[in-house]
Amino acid sequence: MDQIAPRIAWRRQRRWWPAVLVTVAAAAGVHAQQIFRSGTDAVVLTVTVTDGGNRLVAGLEQEDFQVFEDQVQQDITNFSRQPQPIALSLVIDTSASMENKLPIAQEAAMGFVRRMAADDRIQIIDFDSQAKILLDFSGDRDALERAIKRTEAGGSTSLYNAVYTAISGLKRIGQEPGPENRRYAVVLLSDGEDTSSIVPYDDVLDLAKRAGVVVYAIGLREKLKPGASHTTGWKQAEYDLKQLSGDTGGRVFFADDAAQLPSYYSQIADELSNQYTLGYMSKNNKRDGAWRKILVRVSRPNMTARTKAGYFGPAVPR
Image 1 (cartoon, one colour):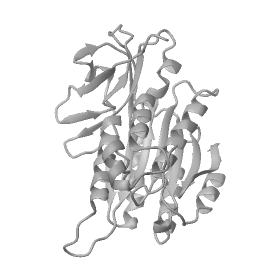
Image 2 (cartoon, helix red, strand yellow; image 1 turned 45 degrees about the vertical axis):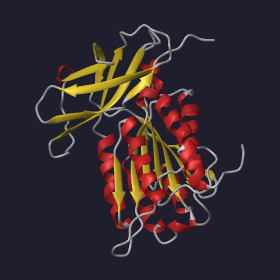
Image 3 (cartoon, rainbow, N blue to C red; image 1 turned 180 degrees about the horizontal axis):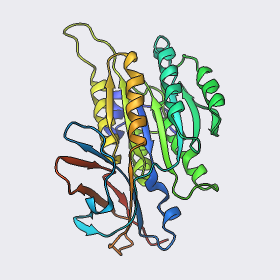
């Protein structure tokens, strides 16, 4: 691929600028056919429900939900309120700017790993100028913590290369034997704009949407002097991050201090432990590969359901 052009000019053309973040992507929708083997129109949604105080809501029943695809109500055929197993890629920014924050980030990441269930499988990736897999998907918590402790700060920030690598790994493990109803997740931590990725933002967003990945993001903001403001690149990065999480059904967090990381990791773990899985067979029989918008509603008052914005329908093979 050609070398990166001057960043501002390139950003206008390809939406290159990334964001400062921790990202968690849960991708139950990636493997809809693993749950529904009866047809290609099966759709699986990971749904989070919150109340008016943004508190997680548990204990709902199937009849409490309504699912719409392109404004057409769908018939829910599968439902679960029990946490499904997760294959999770934990990605940690180890660029030079993380040097003073890395010890806290390591502790927060290890605390997140300890929250995962025994049948979950986790991969550890760190990235600076390149993404490196420190440990492939494993359920060995001691090995996972040792891998996290091996991270060292230095180099530039190839954020989107790392996201692309993580999603690719999840696609690989999804083809291997395992629970048919497994969710898929990416957890990415970074504190700065992308400075050295080859993969552009648009390609990562497209891959996430096609894979059905739910993205959660926590960005470590740089502390500014009184009266100062963030750069244009940072503001664009925040916009991209909000779009990435919003389109995929996740949440975005911004931290002004690394000390907040354990709390945000904990909130993400709580959400992953309190999600619903809904399945339906799409009433749309077209094979045009077009984007289909999804909306999930909860019939009870003062409750909001959050899931991915949609998916690409099946296409006629060429």
